[in-house]
Length: 200
Ligand code: SF4
Image 1 (cartoon, rainbow, N blue to C red):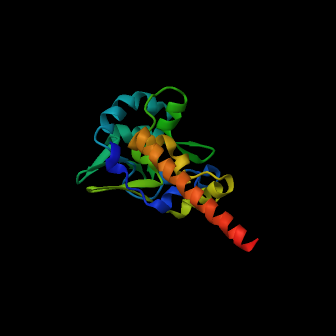
Image 2 (image 1 turned 45 degrees about the vertical axis):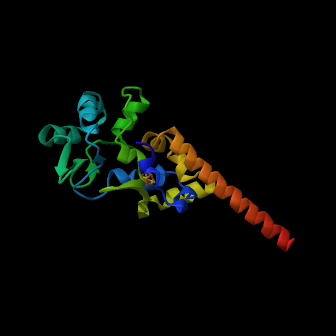
């Protein structure tokens, strides 16, 4: 995929972010709406193949929906997972009332080698699409605790999404992002020390 996706707002490179599932309860998997996770065309046969494994992680109601309606829908040129009751992605599984991605769970259990749809892996970053390959930050109220946790722990969004960004951009482009981030922090450190010298 290489350089086509390079465009990322510089302000995003310095954003601090770390998902806080205890606070958000996996809200991004259960947002109200008719469309679930955006799917790339090449992901549909991968999911078809993974269904017998991933279904074991799903609530009975979600398995039933897949049997009845299939796991994805098309709208214009776009495909997405279906939702249950116009809310949870059909691939959600619950633990202590927290919504988890069933693919991610199967991946963690080494039942699948494919982690999850790229759009979910990248969230809260979104590829703009329609010919615009740049990445934007989708700021939703449910992610506010993740911004706080990121600030507290010093975790940058770029570092938190390392695996997903490498999947999208490749190692080289990802390394360039980290370099940009290091450059920014060197710059602010220099600015801070100049301020200290001036005021000291
Ligand atoms: S992206 Fe936001 S809503 Fe989704 S798990 Fe992370 S903090 Fe929660």
